Length: 170
Image (cartoon, rainbow, N blue to C red; front, side, top):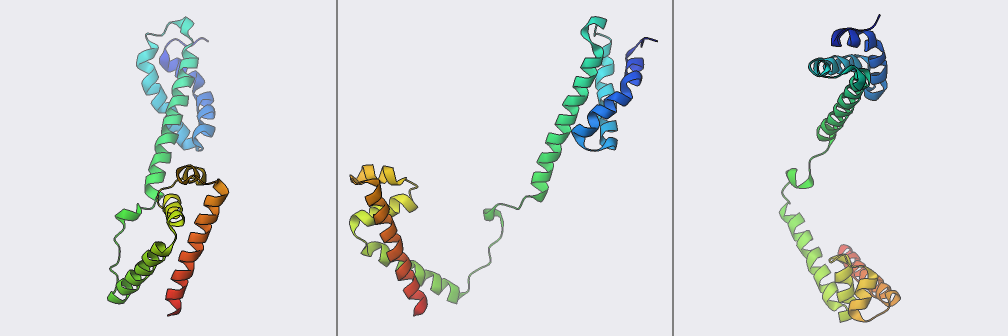
């Protein structure tokens, strides 16, 4: 018996549509919901679809699109629900006066160690660590080879680390 209208067409292919949607959404009950939604969207359009336009393929396409939309929406909701807030959204605890003093002292030692570097080493270090420049870009700017810039940055980093380690020993 050939299906006469959209309802008959839907009923005759319902099981296949649910089987098709289940792996797309990962749950048979969700697939049932998707197929029902597909019929709601298909029924008004089915009246205008000529028999040569493959209404069954159109119905399967609606199911596929709804399943993908559901997965996309679920993924977005999961990301928002499980994601941790941005660092700037989390209230920060106030530093104690002792912590403020220690932080200020470390910053002062860092600044002194940075100023104690030779000019090329300081420029290379600042460009690399604070400016995000590559060693090759720094070498072009300073007129040095990449290897020389690497040595300057490494030497600067070691000097600053040593100055900060000395502050912890005091």
